[in-house]
Length: 322
Image 1: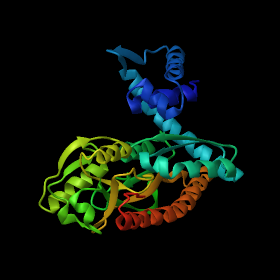
Image 2 (image 1 turned 180 degrees about the vertical axis):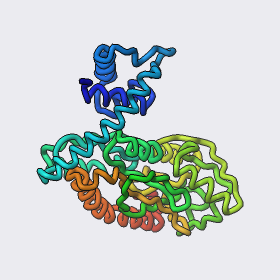
Image 3 (image 1 turned 90 degrees about the horizontal axis):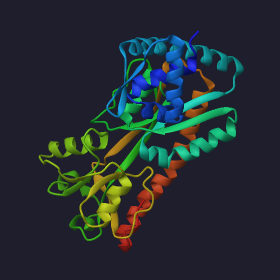
């Protein structure tokens, strides 16, 4: 009989396209994943991975076995849900994916709460952009994902997934203190044209929103710097190299010389959690959702404080923001 852990490792390699990607998703080392695949090859007497350049590719037999593994893992999950439901306790492993600012601004508190409330639950966190995170949930590679989208750029949520809306995450225009727009109390969207933009790369929901919004206002955004992390964007803005639109969640205190200005109409991301509907009754899922809701409610005060910080920076010119 084939070992379930080895099938899980093979399925992860098929989903993520590499041993390293599978290891990151499973919380193992690449060496451990390779060993699992090697044992599965001996167990099945079949070559499953072949070298290609510096990486590996799945053989045809491995792809067929990975498809079977996905079905088997689905059955196992349903059994685990039923057993967990009977016990009424959150146990086992819960793998959570979260976008970067959500992982920084929300998940630390959630993880602390879960550790205190559910000591027998092994929670693992992986950082992932919303698009791939939604795919990982649908494929069964992660149990729960914290994701975000924009009303004008909705995140596709596949059939068979459930969602819990947490709320909006307002976005401010960040710019050097000496920028002409810094003198405005609020910045109309129509004034966002003809700027030197610092933005996340194309294919990211935030970039897609910026492009669509400015095009609707008759402008083509001039993106000079494409960087994946908001912290790096803020550093470039502090250096006077451009302006950016940065959400409040996980933003932290702004450096001196950078000011935040609200935009009207106010842009806001929608933050929500998604999971497989068949696991909705699993105590680990319900406990995680409860913790997310509680921490989001607590973060609401921080978001209000962030907005107050914007007002204070307008009053004293210090550039301190949320």
